[in-house]
Image (tube, rainbow over all chains, first blue to last red; front, side):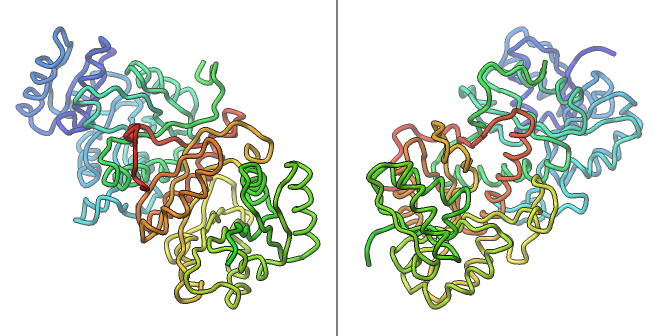
Length: 228
Length: 228
């Protein structure tokens, strides 16, 4: 399996922003979308924004097979359907990084509110839906899509939740390819319900400060080798 | 009414840490406890730690009448009983700053888990219990009590939730008396359910990094006059 980074829902704001940043750091990207033409169009935009970008646009199921660590960046209302459609595409040993947030906006609620997810979090719902042997890791909820896309300097942390440190370490390594991002181990997958709620919290702060806020965890050891 | 800072539950870890820091910045403190002797003992410890500290220990109800902005730093399992006992002590116009966290530990659960509070958050439960005309503001959930008490440098943010910006601004002013703390407006009181959950999240991080982690919101305007 090639080492590209599939981004399912890569035509959306967060997915596109991640694609641009990873392309800048030389990673090979595959943008997935429900429609091939939308994926291709987004890939062309990445190429235009990042000269020399290694990027391709494919339908979601095809994209998901192109790398060992698949990022899911669809809106919450599309998470379940997308994962159903990926059932035959995802294979044992792959990691699915769930970036979705159960925003109340999915059912026309406020952007500062979340929905209660039966399993506890969108990430845990994803874990229930992926094929046997696929591991879900939760990450990237507090990074501003607009900041990534528009080239703002981002100096902030990404909180990563998952059952196994080894899996989280692999995701951390990819995330830290993006300049300015530090990956922080935030515990098991059940902590995703708290981390996912950082998005509406930051939206509430952004509306008051006209900012693109992120999160930094203070007080961690400076010369940390947590992921080593 | 004098301008002392009453800290209800000031013999506990967070309350004591705040007392030490405010004493260091010259604020007058009143430590409240269910038992007068425990309050007096804690006040003596503050005096020993901070030469010249203006601090007094009183029973909770007596302490609560000593200043316009009252900090509630009791464990969640004691929040309801404490507020019931303060019903005659709190008066219209006072602000109650709720610092409690609905930790699952209150019912012997894990320190990384929260309880669901019917009203949505401990702060909203507090708002339901205080006398008419008393306003609840939620704050100080992400600051390490140990760091405050043991003199660690703290350079981090305190997320403040409440209905009225003017009330939050008064609380922010007190919080920013403590060196290294910046107050951030995190929206209405209903956002407290997210901010309260930062405590178990930080506990999960602390256990992995052997740290006393806090939170910093990145991307806010540098020369911010939000509270002005």
